[in-house]
Image 1 (tube, rainbow, N blue to C red):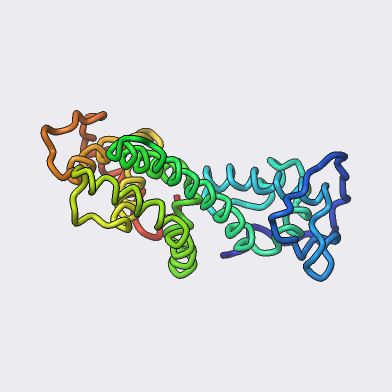
Image 2: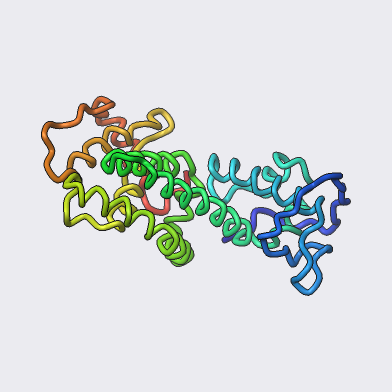
Amino acid sequence: MAPGSQRPHAADPAHPVPGGSIDPGRAPDPGDPGAEDGQRPLRADAERNRRLILDAASAVFAERGLEAGFEEVARRAGVGVGTVYRRFPDRDDLIDALFARRLDELVALTARAGEREDPWEALVWFLEESVAAQSCDRGLSEVLGDGLRGAERLERARERMQPAVGAVVARAQAAGLLRDDVAPLDLAVLSRAVSQIGTEATPDLWRRYLAILLDGLRARPERPTPLPRACPDEAELARVAHKARPGRRR
């Protein structure tokens, strides 16, 4: 990834925060002055800054995509841009950290789907939540479509999510509700495709096409599901197609 801006030469002063927390399960940040030989965890103030940066970057990248400047991330985090670069010297470092956090959320979402009593409702809920998460996060969408690096991240996602998604699929198929020839990976492909449908003016347009998709996934559809939106007109479809064009900067 291209850097967001030139790295400043002067470092930001530290601002210790009494009572800050340290996540004992997370590896130390080698760029932090409190890390020594990869063994010492982040100081409370460094950990606080890291969390602020990740929260801010998550919001900025969701709105503007992965090429958003580090200056905006720093402004929203309330830290200097030098602090952002100390925590994440390369843009890919920040993207990987954000993707790891997002993947944790998606894995938890999949697990919650498996807790639903009705097998079909579990499948529908998982697809709705998965599509909604991707459709409103431009950064996540760009990560998943990012060529080789995107493929590497997708492989990590599949490894972690496959067991839970497979269980949701197996339950629906065992109940005779889902087509027998549908595989867990099909859901990933379909949710990714449906999440790309919509524009700023019609952010929920994907719901119409997810409803059509769900009827196609049913083993024995009794009657068509009422569609939640009207069919878009030609001008709106043109905007959707323009948004989905490969390589276009939005």
